[in-house]
Image 1 (cartoon, rainbow, N blue to C red):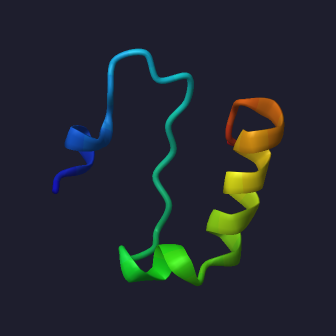
Image 2 (image 1 turned 60 degrees about the horizontal axis):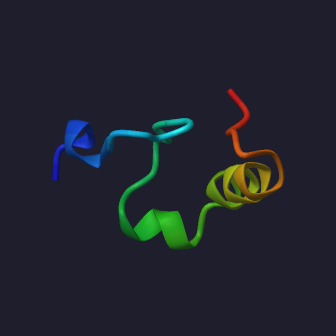
Length: 45
């Protein structure tokens, strides 16, 4: 999948992180961003 295909109408925020698809499960940076989004509705840029 291309990153451009991950964007959807009505999204409130978007970030790209330098991790592989499998790395999403193990990355501390991804976990921090995930929690940030759940708390604030936005990623930390």
